[in-house]
Image 1: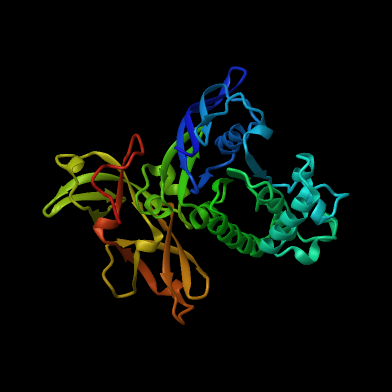
Image 2: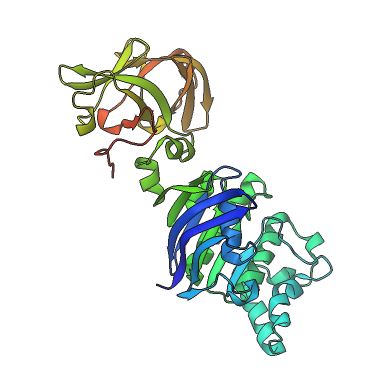
Length: 366
């Protein structure tokens, strides 16, 4: 299968194992994002694909060729780094062309390639400038241009937008997405920012402690997290989690917590499960606020309302734990004194095992 294939990839530093048997297939022309907190092993995995870190155990294939012992320069991959890694004494054109000059490509071919890539990235008018005379976004485009001009089989991105401000990150995300659609090159992208992952990826790989927690499309991970870690990491704001006990109600299972309760969708694993400890997952987007005088399934203590224009984040407390509700504002900016609780469709409540944190089966949303 063309693309990138990892089979039981392990990385050790002495006696410490930091990547634990990763299996991953990246299809040809696919854009896959590795996401997770700092120290989860995502950058180490990317560097093993690039050949910058030695693989301790396992099999790595690029375009159906085993490359475990192949030098980085011979893997036909191009990497874009967080710190741009530009040569300060070279101008933009020379930085873009550097890899081709090292390969001793003909001057005519280099000039044509640089002109084409500069046109794609909007750098034509900056070709004579040095990196010090460019903005952060322009420098990152130069770094991308240096990768593109090599025409590699695989692009590797190591947190390339971390040094940019919020507005530039948004612009560069769009540019990277457009670029991928235009070039159609297999891409593996590392970030700790789940918003980047959600907006860029064909598929997301969520990592934790050197292991893969879940692989899926952005919406599949958002709607159907495999465990409480994925639920808390994917989504902005993340999924609310409530510790609860299962009880049998007249119309089916009920989750009780702090003197309140919520009806649950019938699940096979909850039949006869009185007293079972579970964790309820409630997306802030799926919660419907109730106002003073309306009946609420669950009452909460409102701490503050974060108004974001057409929508607002209602920060509340439930049993002493933070609870966030995402709601529309309309023209109402006095929500703080008007909300007393919330309702939610039982089908949109995720139920996780209280001990393992793994989602109970039969809850897939589409």
